[in-house]
Image (cartoon, rainbow, N blue to C red; front, side):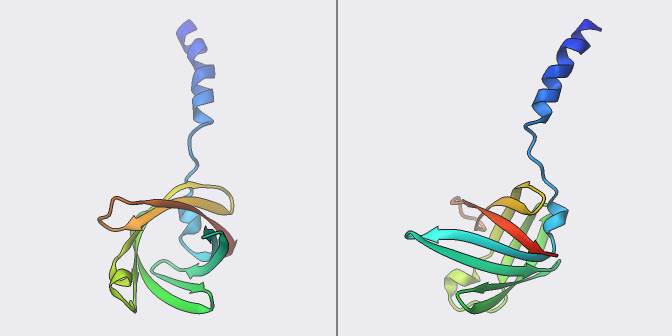
Length: 124
């Protein structure tokens, strides 16, 4: 019994560090992704339903299909690629979530290089 009482505080502290992942909350909605390229802040806005993502970047709109692997991972494939690079699918993995945002990593399918970013949900 003493062992259990001793371990309870330790176990409760460990649970504080579990990354929250309510990925289902982000399968649909309107989102914003901000990032920096060469010191210039860029913003992409996109709307996603279960199988389609429509993205607007610098006044240009593009559509991609979504294939969900599980609740927290999906593959994006551009519907109308304009070059060889756009033909490659992108693997997206949600790492953590908050009430209105998620942190993710992404990269070309089959490539070792991965990048991270944070997306904010702006509406349902």
